[in-house]
Length: 401
Image (cartoon, rainbow, N blue to C red; front, side):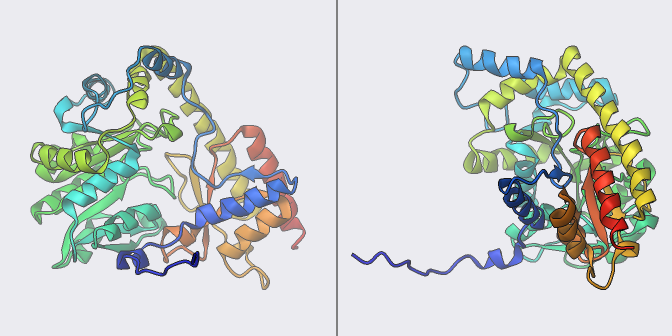
Protein backbone atom coordinates (compact mmCIF):
# COMPACT_ATOMS: atom_id res chain seq x y z
CA UNK A 1 0.00 0.00 0.00
CA UNK A 2 1.40 3.36 -1.03
CA UNK A 3 1.15 5.86 1.86
CA UNK A 4 3.09 8.61 0.12
CA UNK A 5 1.37 11.99 0.04
CA UNK A 6 -0.28 13.15 -3.14
CA UNK A 7 0.42 16.67 -4.31
CA UNK A 8 -2.57 18.50 -5.70
CA UNK A 9 -3.02 22.16 -6.64
CA UNK A 10 -4.22 24.61 -4.03
CA UNK A 11 -6.48 27.54 -4.73
CA UNK A 12 -4.48 30.43 -6.15
CA UNK A 13 -6.12 32.88 -3.73
CA UNK A 14 -3.97 31.45 -0.93
CA UNK A 15 -1.03 33.33 -2.42
CA UNK A 16 -2.77 36.56 -1.40
CA UNK A 17 -3.14 35.54 2.27
CA UNK A 18 -0.06 36.23 4.39
CA UNK A 19 0.74 34.28 7.57
CA UNK A 20 -0.35 35.93 10.82
CA UNK A 21 2.92 36.94 12.44
CA UNK A 22 1.25 37.59 15.80
CA UNK A 23 0.51 33.88 16.05
CA UNK A 24 4.10 32.98 15.13
CA UNK A 25 5.35 35.12 18.02
CA UNK A 26 2.79 33.41 20.26
CA UNK A 27 4.18 30.01 19.25
CA UNK A 28 7.70 31.15 20.13
CA UNK A 29 6.43 32.30 23.52
CA UNK A 30 4.68 28.99 24.12
CA UNK A 31 7.92 27.13 23.36
CA UNK A 32 9.76 29.21 25.96
CA UNK A 33 7.01 28.54 28.50
CA UNK A 34 7.41 24.80 27.94
CA UNK A 35 11.06 25.29 28.91
CA UNK A 36 9.95 26.76 32.23
CA UNK A 37 10.32 30.47 31.37
CA UNK A 38 7.86 32.97 32.82
CA UNK A 39 6.41 34.95 29.91
CA UNK A 40 4.36 38.14 30.13
CA UNK A 41 1.93 38.24 27.25
CA UNK A 42 1.29 41.67 25.72
CA UNK A 43 0.82 40.43 22.18
CA UNK A 44 -2.58 38.93 21.36
CA UNK A 45 -5.54 41.29 21.75
CA UNK A 46 -7.70 39.32 24.15
CA UNK A 47 -9.19 40.67 27.38
CA UNK A 48 -7.83 39.01 30.51
CA UNK A 49 -11.37 39.10 31.88
CA UNK A 50 -13.73 36.19 31.25
CA UNK A 51 -17.45 36.33 30.58
CA UNK A 52 -19.47 37.99 33.33
CA UNK A 53 -21.15 35.65 35.85
CA UNK A 54 -24.72 36.45 34.65
CA UNK A 55 -23.65 35.46 31.13
CA UNK A 56 -22.18 32.16 32.31
CA UNK A 57 -25.35 31.49 34.33
CA UNK A 58 -27.49 32.16 31.25
CA UNK A 59 -25.43 29.67 29.24
CA UNK A 60 -25.85 27.03 31.95
CA UNK A 61 -29.62 27.59 32.00
CA UNK A 62 -29.81 27.27 28.22
CA UNK A 63 -28.00 23.92 28.39
CA UNK A 64 -30.09 22.69 31.32
CA UNK A 65 -33.28 23.65 29.47
CA UNK A 66 -32.14 21.89 26.30
CA UNK A 67 -32.04 25.08 24.20
CA UNK A 68 -29.41 23.63 21.90
CA UNK A 69 -31.07 23.49 18.49
CA UNK A 70 -30.21 25.62 15.47
CA UNK A 71 -31.47 29.17 15.53
CA UNK A 72 -32.41 31.31 12.57
CA UNK A 73 -29.39 31.99 10.37
CA UNK A 74 -29.55 35.66 11.37
CA UNK A 75 -29.88 35.02 15.09
CA UNK A 76 -32.24 34.60 18.03
CA UNK A 77 -35.01 37.22 17.92
CA UNK A 78 -34.47 37.89 21.65
CA UNK A 79 -30.78 38.65 21.08
CA UNK A 80 -31.42 40.87 18.08
CA UNK A 81 -34.01 42.78 20.10
CA UNK A 82 -31.56 43.11 23.00
CA UNK A 83 -28.88 44.52 20.68
CA UNK A 84 -31.44 46.93 19.22
CA UNK A 85 -32.35 48.04 22.75
CA UNK A 86 -28.66 48.58 23.56
CA UNK A 87 -28.29 50.93 20.59
CA UNK A 88 -31.32 52.83 21.86
CA UNK A 89 -30.05 53.09 25.45
CA UNK A 90 -26.36 53.83 24.81
CA UNK A 91 -26.44 55.72 21.51
CA UNK A 92 -30.00 57.02 21.29
CA UNK A 93 -30.47 55.20 17.98
CA UNK A 94 -33.52 53.36 16.70
CA UNK A 95 -32.09 50.33 14.88
CA UNK A 96 -34.76 47.86 13.78
CA UNK A 97 -33.97 44.32 15.05
CA UNK A 98 -34.48 42.91 11.55
CA UNK A 99 -31.43 44.89 10.36
CA UNK A 100 -29.23 43.11 12.93
CA UNK A 101 -27.57 39.85 11.82
CA UNK A 102 -25.98 37.74 14.56
CA UNK A 103 -22.79 36.03 13.40
CA UNK A 104 -20.06 33.64 14.52
CA UNK A 105 -17.84 36.48 15.73
CA UNK A 106 -16.96 39.74 14.01
CA UNK A 107 -14.81 37.68 11.62
CA UNK A 108 -17.91 35.98 10.24
CA UNK A 109 -19.61 39.37 10.01
CA UNK A 110 -16.74 40.73 7.91
CA UNK A 111 -16.74 37.57 5.84
CA UNK A 112 -20.45 37.94 5.09
CA UNK A 113 -20.06 41.64 4.27
CA UNK A 114 -17.17 40.98 1.88
CA UNK A 115 -18.92 37.97 0.33
CA UNK A 116 -21.87 40.24 -0.41
CA UNK A 117 -20.00 43.28 -1.71
CA UNK A 118 -16.57 42.24 -3.04
CA UNK A 119 -15.89 40.46 -6.31
CA UNK A 120 -12.92 39.93 -8.62
CA UNK A 121 -11.19 43.21 -9.33
CA UNK A 122 -13.01 45.12 -6.59
CA UNK A 123 -10.74 47.56 -4.77
CA UNK A 124 -11.38 48.43 -1.13
CA UNK A 125 -9.58 51.32 0.59
CA UNK A 126 -8.24 50.90 4.12
CA UNK A 127 -5.49 52.53 6.17
CA UNK A 128 -1.99 51.18 6.56
CA UNK A 129 -1.71 50.16 9.42
CA UNK A 130 -4.82 47.97 9.71
CA UNK A 131 -5.82 44.67 11.26
CA UNK A 132 -4.37 42.14 8.77
CA UNK A 133 -7.43 39.91 8.49
CA UNK A 134 -9.43 42.80 7.03
CA UNK A 135 -7.36 42.86 3.86
CA UNK A 136 -7.40 39.07 3.75
CA UNK A 137 -11.20 38.98 3.83
CA UNK A 138 -11.14 41.17 0.73
CA UNK A 139 -8.52 38.94 -0.92
CA UNK A 140 -10.55 35.81 -0.16
CA UNK A 141 -13.19 37.08 -2.58
CA UNK A 142 -10.58 38.03 -5.18
CA UNK A 143 -10.76 41.73 -4.46
CA UNK A 144 -7.82 43.93 -3.62
CA UNK A 145 -7.24 45.93 -0.47
CA UNK A 146 -5.61 49.23 -1.32
CA UNK A 147 -3.57 50.10 1.76
CA UNK A 148 -3.15 53.85 2.12
CA UNK A 149 -0.21 54.93 4.32
CA UNK A 150 -1.51 56.78 7.34
CA UNK A 151 0.53 58.30 10.14
CA UNK A 152 0.18 60.20 13.40
CA UNK A 153 -1.19 63.31 11.67
CA UNK A 154 -4.26 61.29 10.67
CA UNK A 155 -4.27 59.26 13.92
CA UNK A 156 -3.33 56.27 11.72
CA UNK A 157 -6.79 56.44 10.13
CA UNK A 158 -8.15 57.37 6.73
CA UNK A 159 -9.29 60.93 6.20
CA UNK A 160 -11.89 62.14 3.75
CA UNK A 161 -9.12 63.81 1.70
CA UNK A 162 -7.27 60.48 1.46
CA UNK A 163 -10.41 58.68 0.32
CA UNK A 164 -11.00 61.30 -2.37
CA UNK A 165 -7.37 61.17 -3.50
CA UNK A 166 -7.14 57.38 -3.76
CA UNK A 167 -10.61 56.52 -5.07
CA UNK A 168 -10.15 55.01 -8.52
CA UNK A 169 -12.12 53.34 -11.28
CA UNK A 170 -11.98 49.94 -9.53
CA UNK A 171 -12.76 51.25 -6.03
CA UNK A 172 -16.05 50.07 -4.59
CA UNK A 173 -15.77 50.99 -0.93
CA UNK A 174 -13.79 51.55 2.25
CA UNK A 175 -13.20 49.37 5.30
CA UNK A 176 -12.51 51.26 8.52
CA UNK A 177 -12.08 50.37 12.18
CA UNK A 178 -12.78 52.87 14.94
CA UNK A 179 -11.20 52.42 17.46
CA UNK A 180 -8.56 50.57 15.52
CA UNK A 181 -6.42 47.52 15.98
CA UNK A 182 -3.39 47.99 16.10
CA UNK A 183 -3.40 51.67 17.07
CA UNK A 184 -6.25 52.12 19.55
CA UNK A 185 -7.21 55.34 17.78
CA UNK A 186 -10.63 56.48 16.60
CA UNK A 187 -11.85 58.52 13.67
CA UNK A 188 -13.36 61.83 14.75
CA UNK A 189 -17.13 61.96 14.32
CA UNK A 190 -16.99 64.85 11.87
CA UNK A 191 -14.29 63.19 9.76
CA UNK A 192 -16.17 59.90 9.65
CA UNK A 193 -19.28 61.77 8.55
CA UNK A 194 -17.33 63.33 5.68
CA UNK A 195 -15.92 59.94 4.63
CA UNK A 196 -19.33 58.27 4.67
CA UNK A 197 -20.85 61.12 2.66
CA UNK A 198 -18.06 61.01 0.07
CA UNK A 199 -18.32 57.24 -0.37
CA UNK A 200 -22.08 57.42 -0.63
CA UNK A 201 -21.82 60.11 -3.32
CA UNK A 202 -19.56 57.78 -5.30
CA UNK A 203 -22.05 54.92 -5.01
CA UNK A 204 -19.76 52.89 -2.79
CA UNK A 205 -20.05 51.05 0.52
CA UNK A 206 -18.56 51.89 3.91
CA UNK A 207 -17.87 49.05 6.33
CA UNK A 208 -17.05 50.25 9.85
CA UNK A 209 -15.63 47.78 12.35
CA UNK A 210 -16.81 48.95 15.78
CA UNK A 211 -15.77 45.99 17.93
CA UNK A 212 -13.87 48.31 20.30
CA UNK A 213 -16.40 51.15 20.17
CA UNK A 214 -17.57 50.81 23.77
CA UNK A 215 -13.98 50.62 24.96
CA UNK A 216 -13.65 54.36 24.27
CA UNK A 217 -12.09 56.19 27.20
CA UNK A 218 -11.92 59.94 26.73
CA UNK A 219 -15.25 60.77 25.12
CA UNK A 220 -18.72 59.31 24.91
CA UNK A 221 -18.67 56.51 22.31
CA UNK A 222 -20.62 57.04 19.12
CA UNK A 223 -21.60 54.68 16.34
CA UNK A 224 -21.33 55.29 12.62
CA UNK A 225 -25.01 54.33 12.57
CA UNK A 226 -25.72 57.84 13.84
CA UNK A 227 -24.66 59.13 10.41
CA UNK A 228 -28.00 59.07 8.65
CA UNK A 229 -26.40 60.15 5.38
CA UNK A 230 -24.78 56.71 5.27
CA UNK A 231 -28.00 55.53 3.70
CA UNK A 232 -27.93 52.18 1.94
CA UNK A 233 -24.14 51.97 1.78
CA UNK A 234 -23.24 51.78 5.48
CA UNK A 235 -22.55 48.48 7.25
CA UNK A 236 -21.43 48.31 10.88
CA UNK A 237 -19.65 45.34 12.48
CA UNK A 238 -19.58 44.59 16.20
CA UNK A 239 -18.65 41.76 18.53
CA UNK A 240 -19.19 40.25 21.97
CA UNK A 241 -15.46 39.51 22.26
CA UNK A 242 -13.93 42.76 23.50
CA UNK A 243 -16.19 44.96 25.67
CA UNK A 244 -18.32 41.95 26.62
CA UNK A 245 -15.25 39.71 27.24
CA UNK A 246 -16.58 36.68 25.29
CA UNK A 247 -13.68 35.93 22.91
CA UNK A 248 -13.96 32.15 22.76
CA UNK A 249 -17.74 32.20 22.47
CA UNK A 250 -17.37 33.39 18.85
CA UNK A 251 -20.30 35.75 18.63
CA UNK A 252 -20.73 39.05 16.83
CA UNK A 253 -23.20 40.97 14.73
CA UNK A 254 -23.54 43.31 11.80
CA UNK A 255 -26.09 46.01 11.09
CA UNK A 256 -27.01 46.21 7.43
CA UNK A 257 -29.28 48.32 5.21
CA UNK A 258 -32.70 46.87 4.54
CA UNK A 259 -31.89 45.75 1.01
CA UNK A 260 -28.93 43.63 2.19
CA UNK A 261 -30.84 41.58 4.76
CA UNK A 262 -32.03 38.89 2.34
CA UNK A 263 -28.70 38.46 0.48
CA UNK A 264 -26.75 38.22 3.73
CA UNK A 265 -29.27 35.82 5.25
CA UNK A 266 -28.92 33.58 2.19
CA UNK A 267 -25.14 33.55 2.56
CA UNK A 268 -25.34 32.95 6.33
CA UNK A 269 -27.66 29.98 5.80
CA UNK A 270 -25.20 28.39 3.41
CA UNK A 271 -21.89 29.30 5.06
CA UNK A 272 -22.64 29.00 8.79
CA UNK A 273 -26.21 27.69 9.39
CA UNK A 274 -26.19 29.90 12.50
CA UNK A 275 -23.97 31.22 15.27
CA UNK A 276 -23.57 29.13 18.44
CA UNK A 277 -26.98 28.69 20.03
CA UNK A 278 -25.58 28.51 23.57
CA UNK A 279 -23.51 31.66 23.02
CA UNK A 280 -26.57 33.49 21.72
CA UNK A 281 -28.73 32.59 24.74
CA UNK A 282 -25.86 33.60 27.03
CA UNK A 283 -25.30 36.91 25.25
CA UNK A 284 -28.84 38.12 25.96
CA UNK A 285 -27.66 38.42 29.58
CA UNK A 286 -24.88 40.85 28.52
CA UNK A 287 -27.45 43.63 28.43
CA UNK A 288 -28.81 43.09 31.95
CA UNK A 289 -27.96 45.99 34.30
CA UNK A 290 -25.81 43.78 36.56
CA UNK A 291 -23.75 42.65 33.56
CA UNK A 292 -23.30 46.16 32.19
CA UNK A 293 -22.09 47.33 35.60
CA UNK A 294 -19.36 44.67 35.46
CA UNK A 295 -18.34 45.65 31.93
CA UNK A 296 -18.13 49.32 32.84
CA UNK A 297 -15.93 48.54 35.84
CA UNK A 298 -13.64 46.50 33.60
CA UNK A 299 -13.57 49.33 31.09
CA UNK A 300 -12.40 51.66 33.86
CA UNK A 301 -9.63 49.19 34.64
CA UNK A 302 -8.51 49.17 30.98
CA UNK A 303 -8.35 52.98 31.10
CA UNK A 304 -6.25 52.81 34.29
CA UNK A 305 -3.84 50.46 32.54
CA UNK A 306 -3.62 52.71 29.49
CA UNK A 307 -2.87 55.69 31.68
CA UNK A 308 0.01 53.75 33.24
CA UNK A 309 1.55 52.07 30.20
CA UNK A 310 1.64 54.98 27.74
CA UNK A 311 3.87 57.28 29.86
CA UNK A 312 5.93 54.27 30.98
CA UNK A 313 6.71 53.39 27.36
CA UNK A 314 7.63 56.97 26.59
CA UNK A 315 9.99 56.98 29.55
CA UNK A 316 11.68 53.85 28.17
CA UNK A 317 12.40 55.63 24.87
CA UNK A 318 9.48 54.56 22.73
CA UNK A 319 7.68 57.27 20.83
CA UNK A 320 3.91 57.06 21.21
CA UNK A 321 2.90 59.77 18.75
CA UNK A 322 -0.84 59.37 19.32
CA UNK A 323 -2.28 58.47 22.70
CA UNK A 324 -4.79 55.67 22.09
CA UNK A 325 -8.34 56.68 22.98
CA UNK A 326 -9.86 53.20 22.78
CA UNK A 327 -9.37 49.44 22.54
CA UNK A 328 -6.38 48.11 24.55
CA UNK A 329 -3.38 48.72 22.31
CA UNK A 330 -0.47 51.13 22.14
CA UNK A 331 1.20 51.57 18.76
CA UNK A 332 4.75 52.68 19.58
CA UNK A 333 7.58 53.84 17.34
CA UNK A 334 10.72 51.96 18.37
CA UNK A 335 13.11 53.60 15.86
CA UNK A 336 15.17 55.31 18.56
CA UNK A 337 15.72 51.97 20.29
CA UNK A 338 17.10 50.06 17.32
CA UNK A 339 20.80 49.29 17.01
CA UNK A 340 23.39 47.66 14.76
CA UNK A 341 22.39 44.18 15.92
CA UNK A 342 18.64 44.90 16.12
CA UNK A 343 17.71 46.53 12.85
CA UNK A 344 13.91 46.59 12.88
CA UNK A 345 10.79 46.08 14.98
CA UNK A 346 10.60 42.37 14.18
CA UNK A 347 14.13 41.71 15.43
CA UNK A 348 13.46 43.88 18.49
CA UNK A 349 10.28 41.94 19.35
CA UNK A 350 12.09 38.60 19.11
CA UNK A 351 15.02 39.85 21.18
CA UNK A 352 12.72 41.19 23.90
CA UNK A 353 10.89 37.86 24.02
CA UNK A 354 14.03 35.73 24.16
CA UNK A 355 15.98 37.91 26.61
CA UNK A 356 13.39 39.18 29.09
CA UNK A 357 10.28 37.13 28.36
CA UNK A 358 7.88 39.87 27.26
CA UNK A 359 5.65 39.35 24.22
CA UNK A 360 5.13 42.40 22.00
CA UNK A 361 4.16 42.38 18.34
CA UNK A 362 6.04 44.03 15.44
CA UNK A 363 4.19 46.12 12.88
CA UNK A 364 4.86 43.47 10.26
CA UNK A 365 1.26 42.18 10.25
CA UNK A 366 -0.41 45.55 9.96
CA UNK A 367 0.94 46.85 6.66
CA UNK A 368 4.27 47.81 5.10
CA UNK A 369 4.12 51.52 5.97
CA UNK A 370 4.86 51.00 9.67
CA UNK A 371 6.19 47.42 9.60
CA UNK A 372 9.82 48.05 10.47
CA UNK A 373 9.44 50.94 12.94
CA UNK A 374 6.43 50.20 15.12
CA UNK A 375 5.43 47.62 17.68
CA UNK A 376 1.98 46.95 19.07
CA UNK A 377 1.64 46.46 22.81
CA UNK A 378 -1.57 45.09 24.29
CA UNK A 379 -2.45 46.21 27.81
CA UNK A 380 -5.17 43.57 28.14
CA UNK A 381 -3.32 42.06 31.08
CA UNK A 382 -3.11 42.79 34.79
CA UNK A 383 -1.50 45.91 36.20
CA UNK A 384 1.00 43.68 38.00
CA UNK A 385 2.02 42.18 34.67
CA UNK A 386 2.31 45.60 33.06
CA UNK A 387 4.53 46.89 35.84
CA UNK A 388 6.71 43.80 35.73
CA UNK A 389 6.95 44.04 31.93
CA UNK A 390 8.11 47.67 32.17
CA UNK A 391 10.84 46.66 34.61
CA UNK A 392 11.96 43.85 32.29
CA UNK A 393 12.03 46.24 29.33
CA UNK A 394 14.03 48.74 31.39
CA UNK A 395 16.57 45.96 32.10
CA UNK A 396 16.64 44.98 28.44
CA UNK A 397 17.42 48.48 27.17
CA UNK A 398 19.83 49.31 30.03
CA UNK A 399 21.99 46.35 28.98
CA UNK A 400 22.38 47.97 25.54
CA UNK A 401 23.61 51.35 26.70
